[in-house]
Length: 191
Image (tube, rainbow, N blue to C red; front, side, top):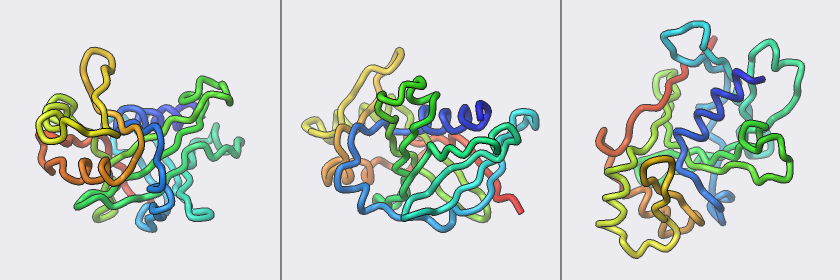
């Protein structure tokens, strides 16, 4: 479980835009059938390659590890729904894993938006470049109510307080260029 949960935690923690509350947008999310199936992580180190299976249950995608050590445990801790925002598709992800909650089941799960695409059997995740994104937000949306700039480690980044119409519009307006978005990870569809 550790290896998979570490991969998913990296996916959720480093690639995501933190969200305190998905609000009514959670119900607007859907299951993306292109995500269904087995996936193998693209990496230059085969020893670090992760494998996962994504399945749909009750209108939610469940992320499950395929590592031998994890098969004995039946914990579905990463759930998500897909949401289109302009030309982007995001996973509204909820991470209830021990890594996310520190094994404290009273600790709220980590929630975030992960921009992704599935094309030609490849699942790609993207992360925002903080410096241009913060500058974009301050210039174009200085009075934004539900997206705020927060200090994270040594730099500023953005956080969505409540995913509402305003936050949704701002996210869809972020330019689709390498200045703002960088590839975070890739997974190939497994046979």
